[in-house]
Image (cartoon, rainbow, N blue to C red; front, side, top):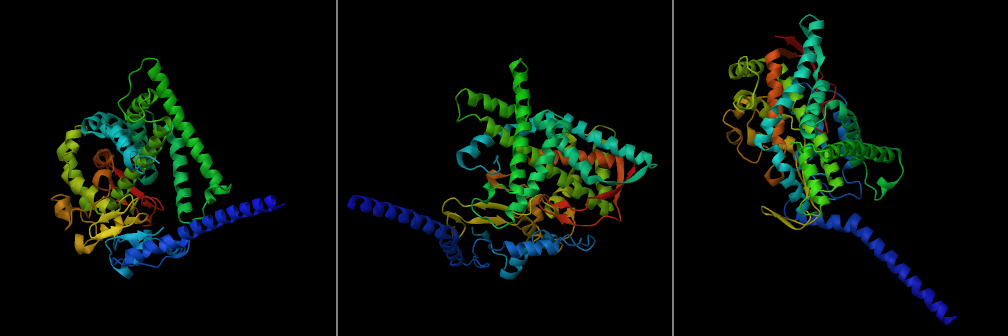
Length: 483
């Protein structure tokens, strides 16, 4: 009886010990660690709202976002869109001042860290070298020509001009380009993938903006089940494209000189047992997902805001068209000519300043990090609010909220007081690997549009930029006129 009692007491103590340790870890996670991080940052002079249990500032942020998106803006007065897209962050900076850091206590190349990031970057980087971009130009032309012909057909049916929402067309264009150049397939083959990834993006944003509850994503809620189903479908479709490429290689076809070709070559090395050099099938799928989404979305956003702003500012549209006509005359736009388009480049840089694809770029410290005079402990999320920095009047001048491409007439370094205040593609070693790809695509598409059409913004246009990836909430109705 004594042995049994001792055993029960021992088991009870072990059980109590487990419960206490679990309770302590939860307390540390939800309260002690966040408060410690807050105290550490405040001691260094950083201000902000106090930490609030679990939900933090999400409720206030959701209320401000809902109010901000309730009605369109006035495009003619200013391009100050930060209060609409990031109202809470905008309000925080106005309340506490422009802190050098904006904190929130708390797969693919873009999210990897350490050795895995180094390996993936090394494998993918050659795909976007200048010589490879030159080889992609015919595919760019093919996709652009298809869109131009469609627009000309629509305009011809109405005489010589028509009202067209260019936003869907530009999305289709950039989707087709990334499919042809990165994966050797047309937009039609990849359309389902794009549709699924767009839906997944909306679901992810909704999940991120809700209160985080540990383990919630594993529950069979309607949203969780849909997200899981989309992920399975996308991976299945991509695996089909990969398998098709594998079969082609098996029957003797040469490896194609595109992104998927580079990934497949790396996968082959992994299959040969050199895991440090190559990628697994899962790695290839994740990189495909990233480039399908990011490669299409960022350039379509750049092009649609360029058309909207040039549709509103006819003088800059005329200057850009004159330059394109002077550089190419009656010739087909080529790589060397595109690199000599100064006015077009100025316009694209100004659009990227006012309407960057990402409103905020965030990084989390995984270990104690020294950032200037600040010592950041592990677990701090550092956010760079692109929209606010790109519109800082101290950096860009009093006209920071106005469309003025002339500021880039002598390059980026002379346009602002700080060389680090313009980062539409990020910066440093993690700068967007596809930035040259995106700029070349945008220059070619805009050049062909300017050569074939005059266009102006429709009176029905409602200025309502919306996140994520600053999109026109109600489309982009443009009146196009055949030249």
